[in-house]
Image (cartoon, rainbow, N blue to C red):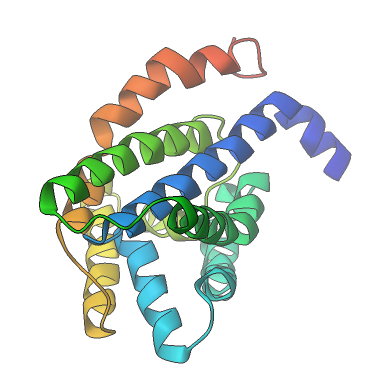
Length: 214
């Protein structure tokens, strides 16, 4: 059954999805380096991990596994190899690149420098999101929450379901002493055009010829 799933999904879709998670983690690490706030979910996980004094990368796995239970019970059809990869890989990728940046670069202290770093984070993160999402190889536990809500409450547009989950994460991040700032706002609204660009000009072309992407 597992072999059949991998055969149906295809190695190229899986590889692109994995690379997407790597670029996504790189983008999150760049946002963190900028010091203006991360996306709502990762910002919340970083804040909570600091509260309980558990390294972010380990806490990310534990928290994602808790959300995975919800996904498994309420949105099993969203589960795929991408779900597992995101759960167990993303946090470690973020930490790896963040520590790498600190070895070679000083964290920006001036606002215009921070904004440039945020812009770079948006571009890299958008590339990652495109390569993670378009192959349709499984939804991350957190991302599945808004999809499950939209399915359970069809009268509520997906946009508002996503705003609810992101807004809740941002609130928890703030209450836990985390940083909610301009970077958080940019992450919430700034990815769309870049993701669309990468979808059309890169990811879909990379997937051409794969099952379901002819």
